[in-house]
Length: 339
Image (cartoon, rainbow, N blue to C red; front, side, top):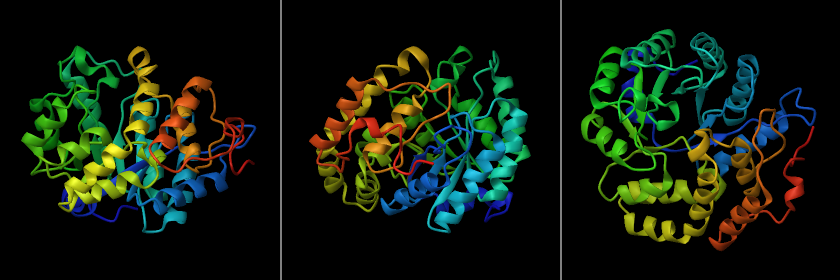
């Protein structure tokens, strides 16, 4: 259950939504019929050990609301009060997202990352507003708004979610506590605009590690997430805290050190995102496995990771001096804790 009342959500977020959030992709049994409890618990403990303060329990992996609640419960039991948990509102319909959010809230989720279903195809701003408000009204959890071109809302407004639209939502939905600001991604216009207008009301998150550290020379950012930066070990939580505490030059020294890994991750994503507007969670799972996470199979439909990108990603970590497994890539689909 949430540790705050709905009308206290923004004040709670201002105080507690601090640090970096990773992404935790659930692990499955070899026959894909059930969740892999040991693999999940290992991955949750690993993000804690690396210094992350939150993690997104990723739901874009063919998981049911009931399984997602079990995933959440295991994460909460493993983490205790050491890690905040994001529920991923990425199910197929508004009603299913509402039902899944209620289950996840009871299981221990703290915050919602609000996504929009692929079949949600609005042609007016009012439709996006109605969907968002209906979800926010139906949950007592704090909600992070997520403007990004993945949703296709640019058919309604070039920004996807304009300043005026976000203003309406913040006025209508008091449990919107943060904005994961990625309008115009991969550019930073959305981040700059949201920070300019709304930084005194809600937490503004720049989830893109490659942007956040440099921009912290100009912006007071308290939170960054959700994103799969855990594949770079403890680097990002450490660098983010350096920048947040006034040691920006030291943060930038770390930033340049991991440039090969950043470029490798960007190159791998650039190979598929522009043509699909879908994130390759198998690639993310592999990146995590390189850094000591469980790995293992994902349910169909799951994208593949070509060998050439496996080699590129592995070499990026090695060239950055970051921890990387010596296990052969053939072990990735088996996972470290198969069941």
